[in-house]
Image: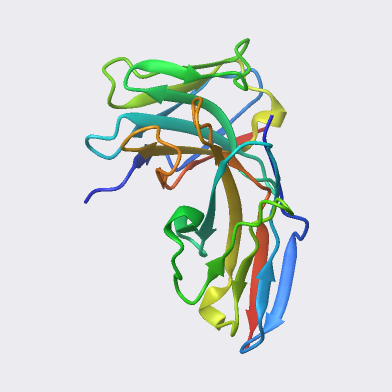
Length: 115
Length: 110
């Protein structure tokens, strides 16, 4: 089966610029996650969608980050304006449901460098 | 809030030696625990989950609720086991938010 697709793979921007990441989950997966992984740290959940509704966005810095999943399929994550500390790998993951024993399928990630 | 601790950033062993990657969690309820692995230039993927009680690539992990631990073990390490290993926790009930530890880099020397 096709995996989780993310684009772009790399992005370099200057601080205060805007950036957007795109994710297409595995077909039929209802749950979609965006994680931020700073170098040397584990993935930190930013937002979790169930279909096109937000399940949890408690760790999303809403003053600069936004995410949407309008049709319950693919999703975009936006940062506006970017700060130096936003440099990280942004991982998208999906799972068939939101059940506790469901495993996550990860994309390759987008590596963001903010200069 | 739930928390996952992986105390070792780096674990270095020789081929054939036993391996134990430590994972401790803080949560008072019934957790679902996982180990994910990321090999060089590959995406993060599930290695095993405690509910399955399975052995994958020779790795096993036992949930110890008394010690709130879910250590990953392998009796004889192989060079191809070199990777980043992440312990993850999901709480049964609620929104099942997956929480990850910071990861342990395992290096297996020939």
